[in-house]
Length: 505
Image 1 (tube, helix red, strand yellow):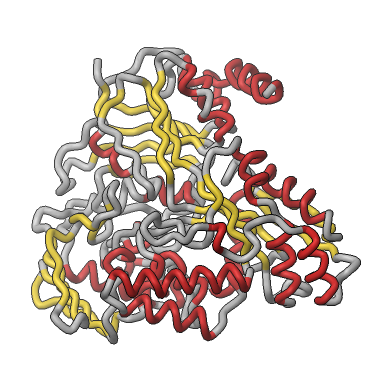
Image 2 (image 1 turned 120 degrees about the horizontal axis):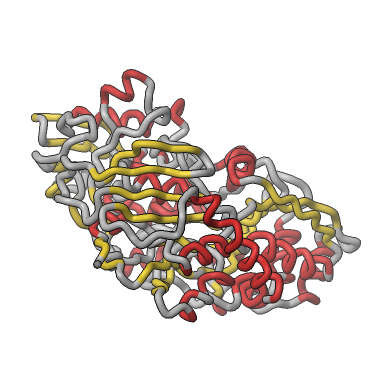
C-alpha cells in the first residue's frame, strides 16, 4: 500500500501537465474522461483488446444489443424474427439509422458487413460465431434475411457484439475500415492521438436520440493512480478503472462515486498445448492441481471477485468445487508430473500485457511461486499491449496471463476457441471431438434445461482437459463525480450508456 500511495502522490504532481489543462470546474457540454489503456486499432471487426472495444462501442452499432439484464434489445434493428424451423432470421432496420457521414444504414450495409466478417482474409475476431450463415437476402433497404444452414440459438447474442458492428458498404469497398471510423453510434471520433487522447462529438443524426453531452474527451493517463489524482481535483468527470488497488480507494473520496458490478470476463492462465511439455495431458492437469486460485485472486486482486470455472454466466455456471482439481493438491500435481516423465520439472515462459489487466504481473508472480513447488521454473515476460495482442493471436507463447471477455451465451463465448471451425484456434491450440460435439449440440438445442446440461458437461470436460487454467472473475469499475448522472454499468463491461450520461450543475 505504501508503494501505491507514493505512486498516487507522484501522479498528482504531474497529472495537470499530462492533461494539458488547468484545474477547472466541470464544463456542462463535454464529459472529461480518462483511462490508462488506449485502443490498439479502429477496425471493429478485428479488435480484441478491451480498450479498443470500449472506444468502438461508442462509435459503431450492431444490429442488436444486450442490456444490463443480458436481454437482447434493439439497436440498428427495431425487430427480428426466426422462422418456425429456426433456419431464417429476419431483421427490420430502423429507418432513422444513419452513419456519421449522413448516409442511411441499409440492408446492403448489413449484408456487406457480415460478408466481410465471414471472409477469412479479414481476420474477424467473431467469425466463428456466424458460420451458420449460408446466404443473406436484402428484399428491400430496411429488411435483411439471414438464411442459416442449421438452427442457431446463440446467433442473436453474437450479433449484439461490437465485433459484429455494421459498417458502411462504401467504406468496405474503399478499404478504409480501420483507417477511419464511420459508424452509426452515438458519437463521432473527431481525433485520435494514440496513447494520448480521443476527442468524440455527439452524432446529431443518431437514431437513438440526443446524447446527454455534446462530446467526450478521453485522456490516456499513464496509470490509474494518476486518474484518481485527476478526479480528486475535478479535472476528470468519469473514468474506467481496472486496478482494484485504485478502485477500492474511490469510496473514500466524498466527491466521487464508484460503480462496481460483477462481470462475465474471466482471468485465466492459458497454456499452449501445442508446445512441449504442455502437449502432455498429465502435465496440464498437474499445473491445474498446483495452482491455488483463491490465493491468486486474494493476492493480485485484493479478493475482489470469485474463483470461476470456464462458464461465468450465472444461470449456467457450475460450482467450481465440482470441477477437476479446484482444491489445490500439490502432492497430486507432483505425482502427475512424475507420471508424465517430468518429475524434475521444466522451464517455460509466461507472457502478460502491461496494464491489461493491471493485475497481470501480480497474477504471474503468484503462479510462478506456486508452480515452483512442482519444479516448473517460470520466466515472466511482460509486454506492451499491442505487442502482447500480436503474440497472443499467433499463439506465440508457452503460457499467457489473459483477461478474456465473457458473453451472455456460452457458445458465443467459446466456439471461436474450442470448435474445429473456431477462428481463434491458434490462441487455444487445443480441440477434441467431445468439446466440438458439445458446442454443436448446445448451439442447436432450444430447450433451456437441455442446453444447461450440455454446457455443464462441456465445462466439466474442459476443466478436466486443462488446456487453460481458469482463475477468477472480477468486477467492472467506473468512477465518476457525483454530479454525473445516467451511467448504467453492466456485466459485459460496456460503456455504451455514456450515450445518455448528463452533467448536473
